[in-house]
Structure formats: C-alpha cells, structure tokens
Amino acid sequence: MEPLFTNSCLLTKEVYKEAYLAITRTRRILVVILSAIILVSSIFEIYWTDDVLFYFFAGFFVLFAVYYFVFFPRRAVNITYQRNQEVYHEETSSTVKFYEDRIETKSIPSNAEATLRYDQIVRIKATRQLYIFTIRQKMLIILDKGKFENINLIEFEHFIKEKAVKAKVML
Image 1 (tube, rainbow, N blue to C red):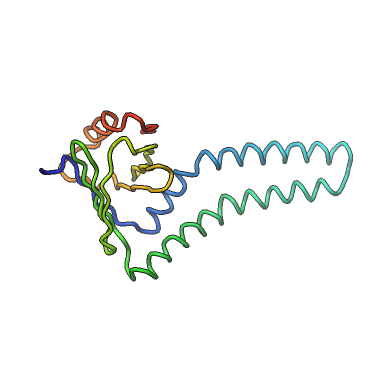
Image 2 (image 1 turned 60 degrees about the vertical axis):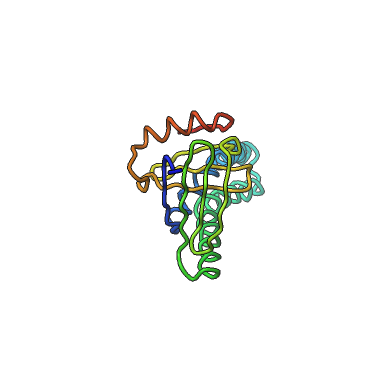
C-alpha cells in the first residue's frame, strides 16, 4: 500500500534549535513571568529598604534569564547535534510515511525504524518550518513543512487532525 503522505527531514543544527525552542516554549514563558515578578519585587525592596542583598538577587535573576534564554538552548542543541555527529559522522535525516492506519518512520544513517499508531501521538506543534509530533513524552518526530511530497499543508493538517484525535493539536 502506498503512503498518503511522505516527509523527509534533514536534522541540522537549525532544525534542532527550532524544535527545542518550540517544545520548551511554555516552560520559558513561566520562567519569564516568575523572573519578572521576583525582579520587580527585588527592585521595590531595594527602593524601600536600601538593602544591598536585594541588588544581589536582582542581578542573579537577570543573569539567570540571560543564561536560560541565550546560552542554555544553544548548549542543548549543540549537545544533541554533536552526539549525532560523533555516532554517525554525518547529519542524520528521517523519512516519515503516513498511511491510513499507521505512521512509519526511518532514520538514516542508523536505519532505525518505528511503526506508530495515530493514537500514540500526544501533542502536535507547528513552527514556521516544522511540525513536531510528541509520542508519549519520550519520542519526537520532526517534519519539515517544505519537504512533503505532492501535497499541500492544508490537506496534511486536516488529515492529521482527523487521525490524531487524542493529541493536543497546536497548528
């Protein structure tokens, strides 16, 4: 049986970065809100008590926010990318085929294969360039929006919404 949709995605550093930022978006928003509350509280405390300790806390949260939003994502992406480079000595890619009743994925050069049911998809997120499927919080399927064969994205989105009824869809 022929697949309904086929997608090939080359997993470059940029793809990893976009996927990482997409899956951690909620967490990053919470950190911004909490940091802002603590920073504002520290500034008010500095104004009213003129205590040097609060300068330290305010500076700490500014440095933490810079680390969390600038350096930590780069580090996480670099670790994942370098791990793949050390193991395979080339960029990895994945081919995902969508059938009426299942999804088949194959990773190259490892030749790892998996067959999944649509009800195993927990979350679907869309970014500018990617679709990211989360499977039971342990596995990600990354699809490049520009690499689908012979379809338009509206058809695919309609299809996946019908099939992945248990997934939290954020398209």
